[in-house]
Length: 412
Image (tube, rainbow, N blue to C red; front, side):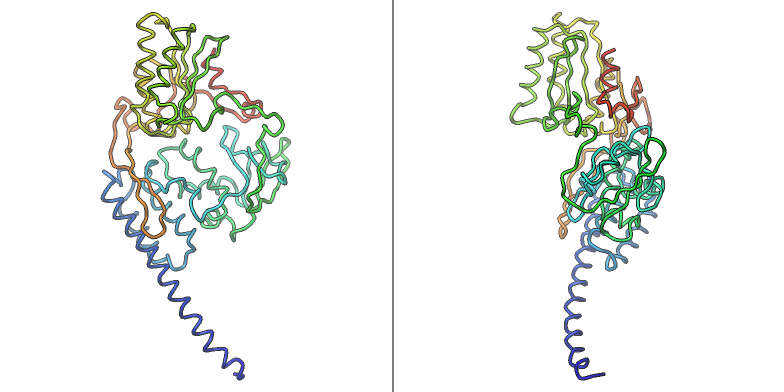
């Protein structure tokens, strides 16, 4: 060993000691979070293993506890989501996963259609992918990628996966944790063109503005996409004499409380002829299921007093994002004689709910945990989804043409 090497060795050793100490502290803090997560889950959830195996869960917890020192922080977050996904309870999850601290998104958005998983937003450098069906990620088939990603998504049913899983496929950290990409960086997405030809695009990690498809050519929103920041709003489709109520969240609005909103509806239907009422909860992920009652009261009062004919046609639009209290409101409407229309719900009718927020002490990651078992619709037993009375597909062609087949069917 040369003198230079000898003199350098102690410095390296001294530098390594604090690094090891930092790693020990880091692993300890993640293990504390893991212990806290499991303890709170067992304390709060009324029946955490109602659809899964406690033994499998405990083995997975022990395995993760052992592997924490080998994992990056983002891999631990994905592993926490994997643990909760084992329960098969869509309410019990890492909140907003994979859109959580430490996990990023490629400037690409995928959406599930009956034709397959397709690109609906992309960076300017990958416009060729817009509207095309995904075939592979990093050379791995879309079916294999989908199956791997299912393991880290909390879901009640297949429709919950169709809503939540596409975001996992555009998270570099999640894809790396699932061993779909070899390192956190750019990823190659392979699409199938209209004539069967392959279209490969490389998407970098970037905050670049992405382009909507097909709106970058025709900047028009479908009616149900309008006012996304509002929890509830309504419109009148005069040619069909239809009252359209868009109910995005069962959450009150301090700027327009539900009581005032319902009064506005009551006043409107006393001035305009209404022969059809459409309540659209396709994007309603829940909240307070009782919040809708003032609307139902005003409409019922208008019918009882002759302002709305008793023969009024009633429809409720449901879909993959209809979940929790949004789904329960659809059940309420169905039991009142309203026709359900659209896709099966992402929520399971008889399942856990009433979530409470748990914040992990060290990472500050927030987790939802169900605290109550519900059986709101015993007639359907253990059904995976609330099914529409009239099933309607929302195809890729519909999306491309900016047509809403759900609303069109309700207006027939």
